[in-house]
Each structure stands twice: as C-alpha cells, then as structure tokens.
Image 1 (cartoon, rainbow, N blue to C red):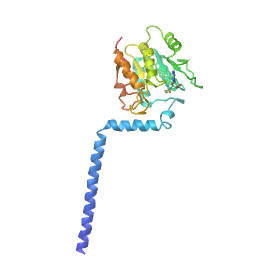
Image 2: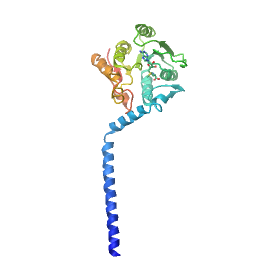
Image 3: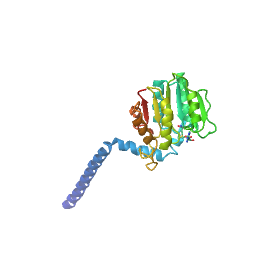
Image 4: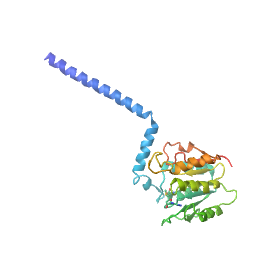
Length: 245
Ligand SMILES: C[S@@+](CC[C@H](N)C(=O)[O-])C[C@H]1O[C@@H](n2cnc3c(N)ncnc32)[C@H](O)[C@@H]1O
C-alpha cells in the first residue's frame, strides 16, 4: 500500500516537473518572439495582404471603396492637417474613395482641392466640388500638362502616387510629379511594400526601388520615417519629404 502511494507520488512529481519545464520553455520562447517585434509586424502585414478580400479590398470611406490601410489614412489626415496643402495630386483614382477621403478632410478644414488621375474611368465615382478627375495615363504628357495647368503659382502641393506600381512607371511619375511638390510638403510613394518589403517578393522592382533611386538622385527629398509611427504601413520608406528647393 505504502509503496503504491509513493509510486503514485513519484509519477505526480515527474508530471509536475515536466509541466514546469514546459511552461518555462514556452515562456522563454514567447519572450524571444516578443523581442523581435518587427517579425510580429511583418507576419501581420503578410496576413493582412493575404486576406485582401476581407481587408484592403473591403475598406470604405463613406461607402466608397478605397484600397488603403486605415492606419495610413490616419497618417495622411495628420499630414494634410499639418500642411494644409492647396492642392493634393493623386495618381490612381480607382473608385474615388481616397480622393473623396481627402476632399472630406478639406471640407472640414475649409481648404484645399484634389486633382486625381486614372487610366480607367470607373463608374459611380462620388462627385465632389473639390475633386477634379482626369482620365488618362499619369505619364501621358497631356495629362501632366493638365495637372500643371490646374496648379497656380505659389500654391502648396502634396503628391500621392498610387497608380501602376511597376518600378519603371513609378520612376517616371516621380520624375514628372516630384517637381510639383513644394518645399516642406510630401511626395508619398504608395505600396512600397511590394517586392518583398515585405509582400509580393516576386513582383520585381516596384515603388520601393523607384523611390530609393529617386531620393539618391534628388537630395532635396528625404525619406521621412516618422509617418511610419503606427509600425504597419503599406508605404515603408515611401514618405518622401521635400526638405530643399
Ligand atoms: C491601387 S489603385 C488606386 C487606389 C486608390 N488610390 C484608392 O486608394 O482607392 C490603382 C489605380 O491605378 C490605375 N492605373 C493603372 N495604370 C495607370 C496609369 N498609367 N495612369 C493612371 N492610372 C493608372 C488603375 O486603373 C487603378 O484604378
């Protein structure tokens, strides 16, 4: 009887020890994992993109689809409020959700207008007195000329590039639209997360590569990483601030 009891106690002790060792190992593993917050962000970023139907293709501003990360929209709001641009130029209108978002902010501030360009003319875009829609390729010289003609001397200009994300196209947009950005304002190169930064590793040169090349050749622009404060952005290293003339 006594030996039966001590055998049971020994089994119980072994079990308790194994549980303790397991708990300690698990906690250590979790600590190691949490010490790499960038990995957590990166994994969440990939998951967010992989679930596009639930996330970025299911995001709306006042009922209008917008292919944006809400954290980025919030940062845009902060930049627009701080800079009070006279004109926001956007390439890549899509259904008009992002330009509608900017127009709503301009309404609240009582200031600013938007020029948005798309090669496709999507139906049912929301009409807004502050928004001018241009139909054509963002790199078509006639479109670029139209955009320029809609900006008056002395106006503060902000530019968002969100059209064809291939590096060659973004590079051309940067060359054409970069000079419109006024000192102190931003040239936002969107979707720099393509080509493994961290999504779509096989995309090939995209916005990230084009932005890097542009900044290297145009020292009046600097990558500003402060707008990445919410840790997760579709535009890593894509917020280019014009610091010089
Ligand atoms: C990512 S979507 C834009 C999303 C939109 N800014 C939003 O946040 O809802 C890209 C858009 O770029 C347009 N696009 C593709 N190539 C273009 C080009 N060469 N010039 C202008 N727009 C282009 C596409 O038709 C598409 O509507």
